[in-house]
Every structure is written in C-alpha cells, then in structure tokens.
Image 1: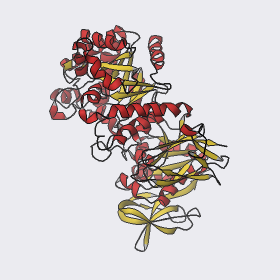
Image 2 (image 1 turned 60 degrees about the vertical axis):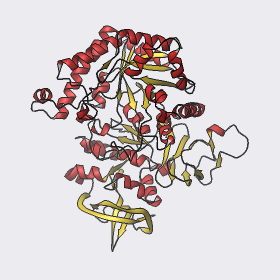
Image 3 (image 1 turned 90 degrees about the vertical axis):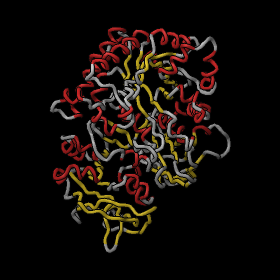
Image 4 (image 1 turned 120 degrees about the vertical axis):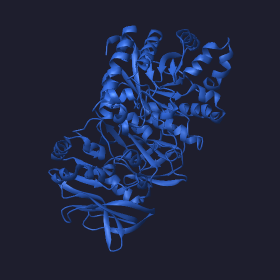
Length: 588
C-alpha cells in the first residue's frame, strides 16, 4: 500500500458523525440517479427522512449494479449534493449481473463484456472518489460454458480463487491506482464465510490484495432465511475478519431485511457491530430506509440506538475472549462459533493460530490445517488448555489418537436428561432436564484414561458431552456438538456451565444462564450482557474476587442503587431484560 492510500485511510478515519464513531449510508445506483436528476431542493424532502434521525457522516455512491449504470456526470452531481451538506463521499460498486436464474448472480469474468464492465466502472469511480467500496457481490458463482472451458481440470474453488485474484490485481487495483494513486479500494466481505472458498473469497488472499476491508454483520432472522446466522455472528465477524488485516477493518455493514418480525432484531445488528469496536457503521441502503414504508420506523430507532451507544462505547476497552482459530480455508461445523456465542461464550477469533493463548478453541474447521497437531502439541507443552469439538475429532480421524483414544462413532443418542461433575469426572451426578429431546453423536473413549465432565443419560447408559484429560503440561477437552447445532440451546444451564468452565471462563468472567444470553468482555474490566430470550431471566455473573461492585456505565454517575450490583464471594446476579444491554464496569 502506498503512502497516498494510507493518507486517504487516515483522513477517512477522522470523519466522525458521532463522538466515537462514524455512520455511513450506502446509496445504490438507482438512488444515485434519482438524486442526480432531482430538481433543486426536491431530494431534501426524501433525504430528511433519514438525516433528521441519524447523523450521517459518509455516503457511498454507487455507479453500477445489475446492468444499471450511472454516468460520471450523475456521480459528480450526487457527490456535490452531499458534500454541500458537509458529508464525506466515497464510491461504491455491486458486481452482479441481472440473471435471475442464478439467484444472486455474479458477473462472469470469463466474458470480455463483463470484464469491461468492472474495468470501466472502477476507472470512473477512481476518477471521482478517493475511495471505492465493493458491495458483497464480489463473489463468483457462474458456471457458463466459458467458465467451464476456462476451469479445465481445476476444482471450482481453485479456479474461482485464481480467477478472482487475477481480476482483483489487473482490472480493479491496477486500474484504480493508475487513475487515482490515492484511491483506497475496500473489499466488503459477506457474512457467510463458511463457504468463502467455494465462491472465490479467501480472507487472507483478498485482504492481502485490497487496501482495506469492511465487514458484513447482517444477521437478520436466524431461522427463517437460508443463510443460518445466529445473532452473535454480527460481533464475531467484526473480530474475525479484522484478524486478517489488523487495523484496516474499516467498519461493519447491516440492513433491515427480514427484520420486520422484530424491530429489536434490526437494532441488534447495530449493537453487535459497534460492541466489536467498529470504526464506522454503514446502513444499507438509502432507498429501503427512506422509500419502503415497511421500514418507516427503522431510521428513528437506529438513530436513537447510535445516540445510546455513543454514551458508553468510548469507555469500553479492546474486546477479549477465548482464542478461536479458524484458518481462512476452513470447512466444517458451519457457524458453530456463533451458536456457542449465543450460549454466553465470548470468542476472540483469528485466521492465525494463537500460540500464546492459555486456552484455545478448535472447531471442525481448524482440522483443515495440516499442521494443527504440531500447533496443538506446542500449546500443550506450554501448559495451555486446548478445547476441541466432536466435529474436530471426526475430521482428524486417526491423527487425533496422538492425544487420546477418543473417536467419533457412527452411533447416535436421543436424549433430554443430563448430568455434570464436581470432582473432575471421577463421578457424575444430578439429573437435569433439557428443553426437548435432541440427537447427539456418541463418542468412544478410554474409561479411566479420559474423564466425563458432563453427560447425557439414557436407559442404563450415559453419553459424554464434555471430556477432558491431561497431555504434557496442558489439558485437552472435547465438547460434543449436537447434530442440529441449534440444539446447543437445549442443553440445560448445568451443562452449559461445564462448557463455559472448560473454556476457562470461571477464572475470568463467566455467566451462568440459559442459552441466548450473550457475554462480551473487554480488557479494561468492562463487559456487556445481552439477552435474546423472550422473557426476563436471572443471570449469575462470576468475576475475580478482587472486584467488589459492578456498575452500569450509563448510570454510574446517578445517585442511588439502581444499576449498581454488589459482588459477594466473586459473584452477583442481574435480572436480564430481553433486548437490553447491561454495559458494566467492574470496580475493585
């Protein structure tokens, strides 16, 4: 990256529409054309529906989407309109086609006509703006005859990764920087990273090419849509994507779609984006938020949300959590981190293996790393806890026998009764009932060599849910993931607490609560507890003994006891209200 681009990034980071962060709006090409063609003062009536509620510091102005093009003159008119209002402007592009047969259809970079579209569009944007952001359609899903011929004997994944890298270098970055050496070219990643390599994305490859990155945090409705996105993903993605280009993850982006069922679900995207310490939040999109009557309440609500966040976000430190390694080429147990995050486990994910972590979490995707056994052994020799999932054990196969005689069998169990332990697995006790019967894999293990910390009961039988044993100076643990990852929510509190303790949270900050209560922790003794339950629920919070009080930051200057919690013997309890953020500071 040249110094001119760095100057552009430094300049853009100084744009703050709120005290602690900036809010931007993305403007699709159809709205750009409307703005450019509007008569004097006419667009003010439309834009006021948004800007009267939200402090907008930047507009991303698009010149291409779905075979719709804006002219350079239209870009300049729209740019002048917003700059006259003191709003910064950047360019935008959505690299999709209008072929409805393919669902969301990417451009085809095996066709010269589509290569010309992206080259010409990028050149125009770079001539008008010092920044260009890609909407998250910069993926490849074309299988036309030209692509089949160009692919040859390569896999689709390898072909698309190679083709996308070539297009990025030759048709995007080279063109943009020749037209404008100061142009900061930003790739905005979609949220569905589990299948990135299938469509040409790779966090390490792409982040190594583009000047900076942006993060999709649009979780929407986790049940009634095809992308399977637990809400915690909005927070997780900001941290995970940022690990691929430290310091240059410029913001998070969310939208109102599939959130009409619950306005809080729209706001939750914004909360989790900002709790991950995003520098900027981008609202998608101008047309939907100001023209679609079904989203009429969204702008006032999100504006109030930003005002609230601005009161305390600057008092929170850097996020911290359990080190979670997921290489950029990983596959397996899709989104399991987010399901666990919805069970009150705070993660600090990375595309790199954290050799210094005291506890490191490895889901099935981490087994894609051919060097993972060596990395685990090094951590264990340093006294670390290495916690893996049942899917990780399955994918490792015989290689996992280095650590213990534990394997993933072909048998299943249908369970709803559970037990835990108080003596490191020498005995299990209790009979706790889950929300419903669920299907779990049965793990084979060596009795008296490996120990159950939590189990599920059936007739004259029990099945391990958490296993642990010693290796070198450290410990290895296995967490059993149900066949339906969402059934993690049906584990009773006692089993969830064993999982939390196995991950070392009891020695730091841990909650004891049903699933769908999230915990986010920071490095300056601050934390956030947010409940996604449908009802109020008492949540027990465990903290180190050195603390005597927990205070809600937004109320800490108020007199009286409201928002203040006494800590006795390292714990206190809150009555978590659905959708409310308990933003707390621990006091010694």
